[in-house]
Length: 590
Image (cartoon, rainbow, N blue to C red; front, side, top):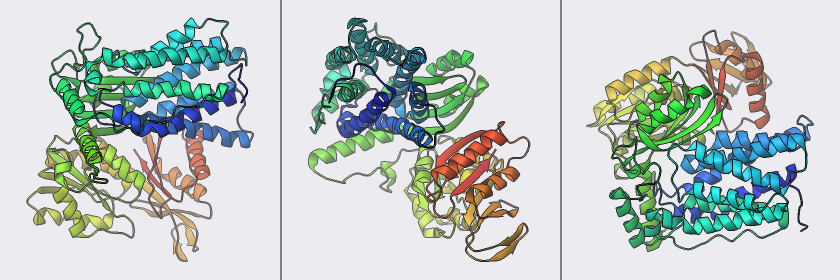
């Protein structure tokens, strides 16, 4: 393989794909290194999922290229990297990685606008910008993490000199990054106790490995299939967390404390992530507000749109900080870190004992779920909806939906399995509400039903769910939120019939609105969606949620979203993969 003297758009694209593939190959090993800031074993997973989103964005660019609808060159590739990483960032490590990629891509795009020749010097500038952007994303930077490794790479690249070749710059950056990674245990005592290097830093070095693979043909290192830290080392690291000395060194920024108080990051129970619409001039105030109630704060974005991450004990306050600044949080995801840490420890213990499959996070037993004041049980079909509900705090999901109604016994088993004495049930179908309302009389727990009739209603209800509020308060808030949503759905007719909007033939697509019945009929799924949305989006409606099913095609989704942007520019559009059968599109309009 010949050595590349310049970094082209194709080489940049290939580097990102190779980076994603390398992180996936090393994912298990990176997860085993993950003991800071929370030992939940998901750093490799979050980095891989973030990069999956970037590659998906590049794939979309490929499709446009094939249709001659996209200009060639470096700019569109850099835009795809920036947008994909912003929208797809997962977890603390994913958000920081997103900022690294965005800083790097922005520098290359600016240089490419002047000259198509991306030299080693430009790549060095990109690495410097990437490191600076990563530090800027974090409210309280901690050394001995991915930040330190990224900065070392940038300093090494810059030290190579302006006349250095592309390969020379990358090799110097990688050498300095590897040295910094090896030194991370000396900067973070918790890493030294566990006998590991920083997980995020290890993932970052793979970016430089991938770049050298593409431009010089150098092989990417093979994954380390070792067992990871021993139980004794993990116990020492846990003790370090418990005693609040995981960071050490009074001179290090942040000190791992939340808001300058005495709460160590390991004592913060919830990971809260959401997208935020907020004026750029207010983002520093937002970060400071989060700093008062949490830690591990990472915020990336710009131009009024941000991807935000925090660890906190106060979910409500994490959302109210945004509202107080006239911001709009959306697609809120909440993870119980205590549960994740317990799951990870159990998984590692089982692996060391050779008990394959001994642990599952959805074991169905309350002992494996976090104790909350009020839990939620929801009915859903489709893997995407199950994941969405889990991200929003649902402890129990029962399979069901149109044509598949769960029994009272199935719902009761889910209620008994959650780790709470108070439970709210979301039936998500009109036919299941009556069944759900029998549950309270069949269990010693308090069970209240929020009469949701669709998945979009459930998503709206879950945005206001508070696991530490009681069931009565939650049911009232969630019922109001669900009632504020106008919902519609698209499915295929299974027989010939008549409707208020004309005759229907078997195989036609039909659009239904809650309370109004069939409002659209046609041979084109995309056109029926458009006709349906034309009636759903009435004056005053601001947000359209699109939940796609197994039968929805990429072209159909793109067509519907494009129509919304063109014809209804006043509304915000959120697209979720639901994976539900029979209904390729579900819509919620708030």
